[in-house]
Length: 165
Image 1 (tube, rainbow, N blue to C red):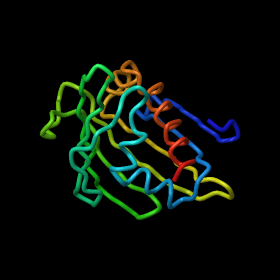
Image 2 (image 1 turned 180 degrees about the vertical axis):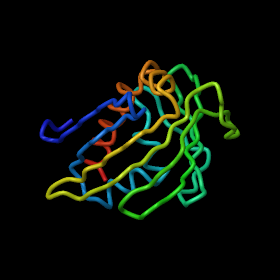
Image 3 (image 1 turned 135 degrees about the vertical axis):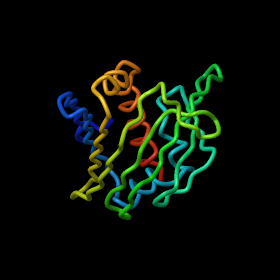
Image 4 (image 1 turned 90 degrees about the vertical axis):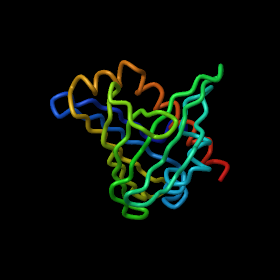
């Protein structure tokens, strides 16, 4: 990661939130595309050596993204992100949870709400992500599963992708 780019990761247990602020050395339109197009998401969303693989994506209000995280040994974990609101080039909200290959949400694992905002700065784009959980136990489970490390790694993948687009 370019050391001049900022990254903040904070956990607010009282309000059951994880907040990630991340700067990218790219235009707002490039960063927005990387978060909203499956062909680009598949290139950065999973932490290496894992890969993201989209089965279906409809980036519209009421649409969803059904994707798998595929490990180096072929292990597959499915997830679904249901888009609730979208303001082009500004923000989107979505519910995300683990699911089966048909998109049926797994109730045994935590779900959370994403509120992702995009702001153009002088030489970069700032992305602010707020994840809200139904319970503190759900938030703690996601952290135990390695969310901070995995998501940080994926955001570094996005840095690499943005240098080539």
